Length: 86
Image 1 (cartoon, rainbow, N blue to C red):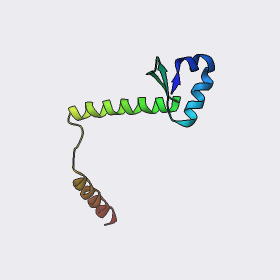
Image 2 (spheres, rainbow, N blue to C red):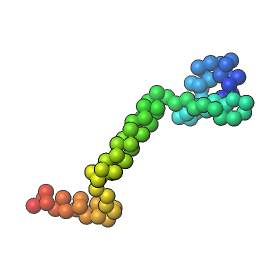
Image 3 (cartoon, rainbow, N blue to C red):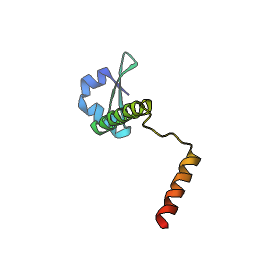
Image 4 (tube, helix red, strand yellow):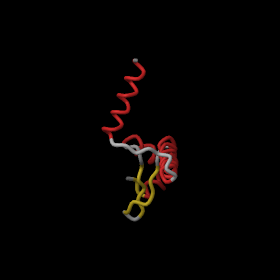
């Protein structure tokens, strides 16, 4: 964690040092976590995952998603393998 004062004094170097230890840097203000800094790649990945999750929920609501158990899915895969080898 980086205190707001450390950030003020050390600047971006404080964030870079924290990101070398962890994949996120937490900035505290008056002893409480206030902000999280992520590398741009991590942020973009999280944003893309959120987008895809929302798309999934929309498709599911429209009935475009097929929901099966793991056992059913494995059986479907086995059937596909059998059909391609015949």
